[in-house]
Image 1 (cartoon, one colour):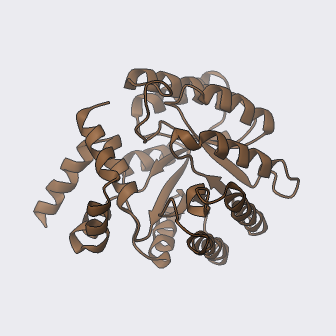
Image 2 (cartoon, rainbow, N blue to C red):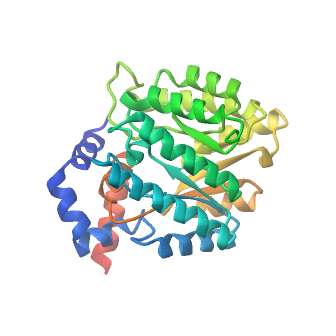
Length: 308
């Protein structure tokens, strides 16, 4: 892991910087590159704009590791409102939720109950619930909860999961999830993990990402491949073409504010594209993880701030 990546991940845990950043005008200006805004109206507007460009959306209320059941319930209510607004405005969008935001750290059963309610609401409104993956200490409990919920006949097909390609265990997880018929969003991973559980070098992560992508593409289930890496995207396109896999059978997923040019190019080529759009005042940890993934973003943002 590069020194800059390690530094940004370390900074993401700083309570002092988070307190300052989330409450300052400068902090909000910085975050605007990757965060749609502070309010539900702003994120819905961002989704509408993308939909008009032929791009679907995943909406995320920023926040994680709540400290009380009251906070967990408030987070769940925010997502229920999102689902209602997505339906009312007829947006091509779904929602993405962290279980720690639903109270996982307080009680796994509490988080599972809130997730079940959201999955039922998503199914009722014609949307979809994606459960985000957090650090490796939470991988097993997250997989277990998603599998239990998906096994319920009334929720089957309305809930999916995120798998991180940098973890050694991910191939076995994907094999199990495919046997259950669960939709997967594959990403590389953005947490600081030890070499005992995760590939420490980028070439190995990239190779595993391609290997896992091919596994997903060969399944009859609709999956999301989340990457901005053009070399990997080219590999995926090539594999799909060689195996007769139609672009309609999967989607590329990208982050709000990252490689907008590539998003448009893929749409023009006939591929499904979905953009992950986060919003809300608790943006600091998410923002710092985006800088950790690609430290060059920090220089890009600084250059643009100096221009203003």
